Length: 240
Ligand SMILES: *Cc1c(COP(=O)(O)O)cnc(C)c1O
Picture 1 (cartoon, rainbow, N blue to C red):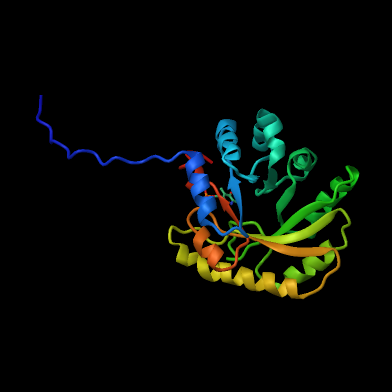
Picture 2 (cartoon, protein in one colour):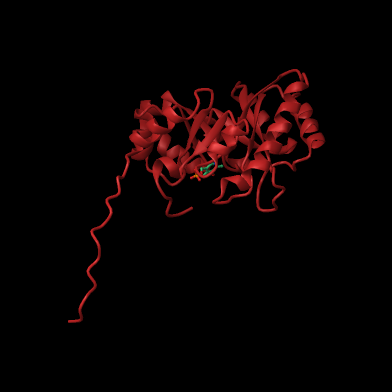
């Protein structure tokens, strides 16, 4: 047997529960900012705990995962708003409409029309946000960060009677350092304010959805009215 090095007494980590984490964040984040919990890869039990802790809004990237959790939660699912925060294929829109209350990732007139047609069939007026690819990254969805293009899309989408444009959503380049995100968030806020200054019928632009676990504080400083948090509440994700 070889000898072994005696390690110092381990530092004790205080592992906070989902309940404690959510409630701490809710107390810290200004009231006018909505917290959407990004629940991808999480179990129904984890989401149930978050809802019991007071979560009001749940975001899901995948229709099938949302559907499984939604049904597993039963009556509890109806106490919260469900946000679609991922890309949705046209053939999944009908299914998605059974679950989601808000679609945050509309980024083309084609996509908007596909949603509008299906919302019309079920006589629903659907709140939607337009996703802006604020960093103009080829890996990301969203319309290019050009104000003229954005306003043009808003005018065209405003004609669609079963959609209601309520906000902008953006991701921004991912970085461990939140300061990297700041100029992108600022640019998104500028576009948001420009749009708010134009009076377009059938548009009620009031939500700016930006900021995730690593960047939500900077996003709020730059004017976010909604943040989308996953890891900071639920812990590290091990897949997807
Ligand atoms: C996963 C995800 C989030 C949350 O990311 P975290 O870094 O875990 O907070 C926010 N927005 C979207 C669109 C996501 O897919």
